[in-house]
Image (cartoon, rainbow, N blue to C red):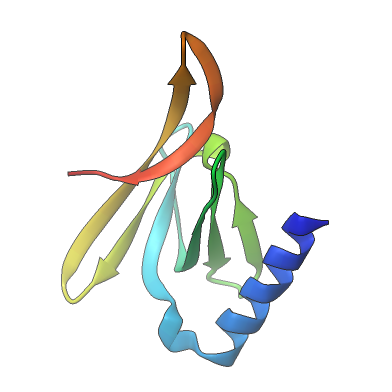
Length: 101
């Protein structure tokens, strides 16, 4: 239910102002690029997600485990975010999104 409210909030935010989105693309697990716009990036204690709007206008709430990462094109610069697995004491605890530096 919490994820549904997050998605609805993201839809309202993205629909109210397209200035809150950036041109970019997702990098799929097999290396393909899906072009569109990147919306809000959500961070939580154990997981994170990103709002992606494809070129047809369909909104997706993407979990980091589903993609390799994504790229935002902002002010003629590319910002790369990668999906990484969080490990604690040798165990997998979940995926998160981090900026590639």
